[in-house]
Image: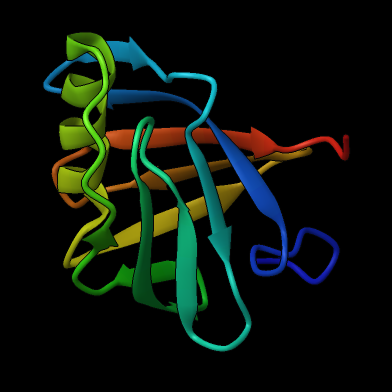
Length: 119
């Protein structure tokens, strides 16, 4: 990551997930915050989550995700399973852009994010 495009301390809105060649748009609630203290938090589309997370160069490593246990509609729950499966217990490569971030797995699946705007 570059100094002018920080990865930590920024709330990222999940825009979409591309897995297995198919792109899935994210529910409005999906968010990710990587903290400087080695943790991550956010929302998978329905449930909130937290996890250990470290950033080393362009690598972001997530530990086991801990989530709340709310039930939502079928589409949101399917997206949540997909996103949680890509983040939990994985190392991804992070590529920041102008207000965007792409996290890519070793298999080429990726999570597309954009900076959340203050409300």
